[in-house]
Length: 300
Image 1 (spheres, helix red, strand yellow):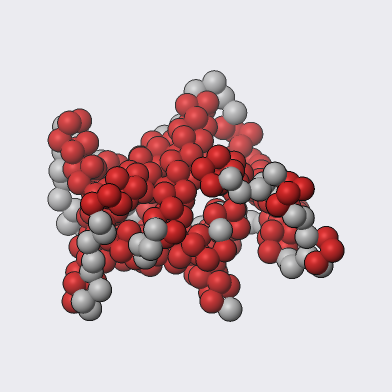
Image 2: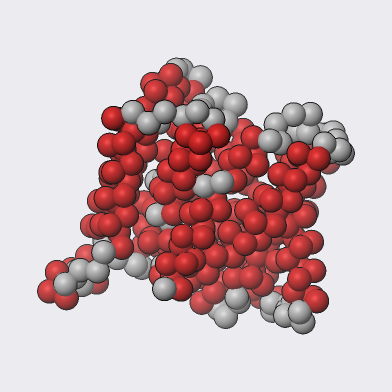
């Protein structure tokens, strides 16, 4: 039940952050908005841990791995995704991001020697095809010469996300709780973003619009502090391959909300895509009979 709650919370929260992100489009540069998000998230999480007496400093030898997690999850990946949105629709970015399940399977094999389970590949394929059907019109429109830059940035952002998963898994195995790693990681990530702002000369526009500020608080407190903690806790509990399937499901939540707030209309192709993504979920998490479970030796 705990794993189900962690997984469903991650999917539901990340499936709603697109609303908050869309409300931040305006005079504040992307780099500055991402900095505001993680600086505020770091303040909230570190402040909470200090007040509750749970803030700890990981040993110095562990700090490089927390820095890798920080740059991968709270800096580089978001910069890639935000800039990719200038070249391709969000639907295509979601399709590329759904391949995080495969990225994680391959990276877990490289860094930890894990077996790559056929069911992981099948579930990822079902999810990716399902999302292609869901976002079919956007993808067709996006297939232009200049769109390859957006696709490349999306793929690079997904790779950074996967590297962050691997670093988080390694940190958890070293005894560092995800909430502690996130507190330090978001702090490091916001510092890195501030340095990038200084180097690029991006203007530090101070947001005054209440809608922007409300969206910022939601992205920082719920979309970052809560969602990243639930997701990375899930990675430590069920593994990076299964946890990454959340990246397939949260676009479905986003589309469901879009049908309510943005007049999105479900088509037969969209319904088929939804069914395929749900089928991928069943393949990924259904408990196999003992005699059908693959052994590590057989898959390695």
